[in-house]
Length: 171
Image (cartoon, rainbow, N blue to C red):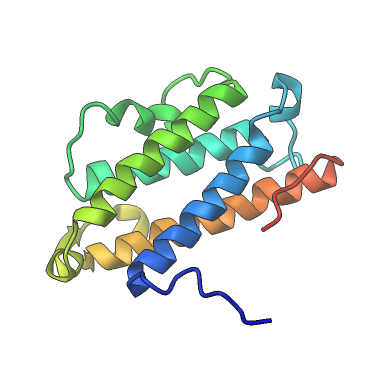
């Protein structure tokens, strides 16, 4: 039997972005049926609960894409505060988290589809005291960083679900 190449008409970036979307959809499917009690589950006492971890994924996407790269979309900006340690955070339902994943993904995807290779090479100054130095980062580096952040915390979500005997994504 011949293997079908589902990516044959895609550019390399489109292949990566489509697989990233598939990963996100698996996280969404795992989170969607969870109850409030299940969203409070942690892998260990010192780690974020499931719901907070998903909110962290969402807020980080918005922080890097909207705020750091100056996309300045006021519609998406409120999601940035979902992980703000200086603000009281309400518990979010599974439906809210799924909607946040969808909104942040659509926001990123609109930009990923629009940006040219020259746009991906554009750089931004990075003067974050936590990083202890000043340097520049390219838009392509930011995309990679957000992707690996999604993978890291999506793995935490999967691990936490599995530890508690819940259906984990098939990552």
